[in-house]
Length: 112
Length: 114
Image 1 (cartoon, rainbow over the protein chains, first blue to last red):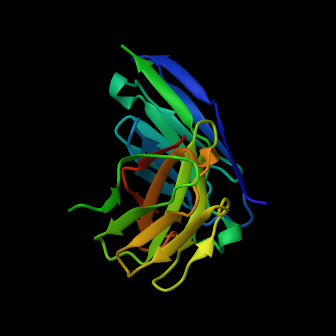
Image 2 (cartoon, chains in turn purple, brown):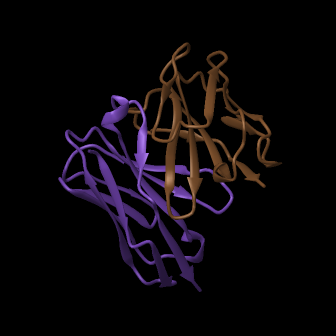
Image 3 (cartoon, each protein chain N blue to C red):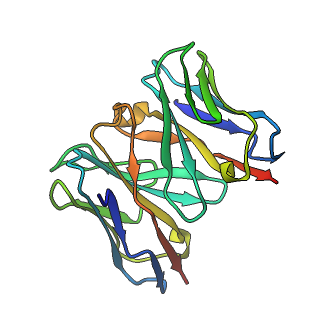
């Protein structure tokens, strides 16, 4: 059964303190791993898609990486505006890969 | 450039009442989805429509029905609301889920059932 697990549930950082968020997946035949950012009271917004082990993508202070079992979202020198919940997702086999299944998210708080 | 529009944004229902959540997209996307989001549970798929004229159950379909009215609109109906359906509901659309950007989400409907 396809599963997506994110850790930690919550993370508090000081401004400038780099760290990583983890997304572990159990999927037969990965067809893409998606990262989204969600601000309070809003819908998730797309960040990255990764398709194969070894792939990396960057956007400002964020870098996403992918291995055969997990993905990391690295945050370098974060700022308070990076505070949000970060979600990862994969196309789920039970839907014929036609819909995404999401992890429960990591709630990131960056303090000035 | 509206993207995905959900109405209403907030709603309070009494147990047993019915209501329909509306969702419309203006991106000519083929696929549309309804999720609910509860604290600590993440986003869970209720129903989806891979293309106009088709709908399929997701992970948590009980107590809900959907209608893909046309390519733009996908509605979610609660026939007899229960307190367990208190949640934030998100509609999303995609050209196809395996496309590079996955989904575009609406801003959500916060539903409270008392």
